[in-house]
Amino acid sequence: MPRAVDGSRRRSRRKKILGLAKGFWGGRRKLFRVAKGAVMKAGAYAYRDRKARKGEFRALWITRISAACRAQGLSYSAFTRGLTLAGVGLNRKAMSNLAIEDPQAFVALVEKARSSLAAAQA
Image (tube, rainbow, N blue to C red; front, side, top):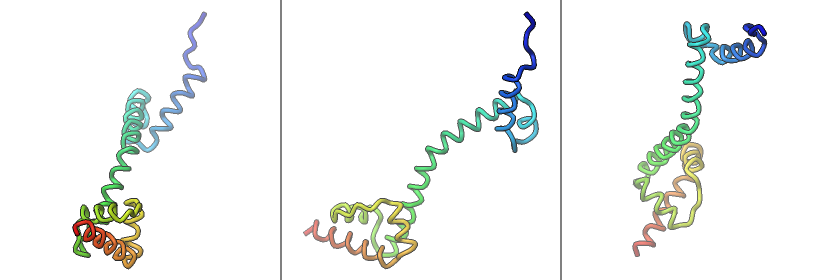
């Protein structure tokens, strides 16, 4: 029985890989063997960085909240401790947006944290 060399399954598999390699540079776009490795590596990076993105955004939110807190004369750690004592359950993303979009509401939040810290020390 003759060996199938240019079958449709083989062609579609190669076409899929080369399609995923569209936009890559040089042989990584045109040559199947090189493109296959590049696509595998790109997929691994994409998977890893989808997970890492969550941590990067969390760090960004914390930086924004910290800057807004320091403008009010309170550290980030003291602010979060005060909110925990006050029983405020806002997440970091919401607090970051509040600090940017509604500074007066954020100042009220800082005052609430400050008063609960004072009550805890008394």
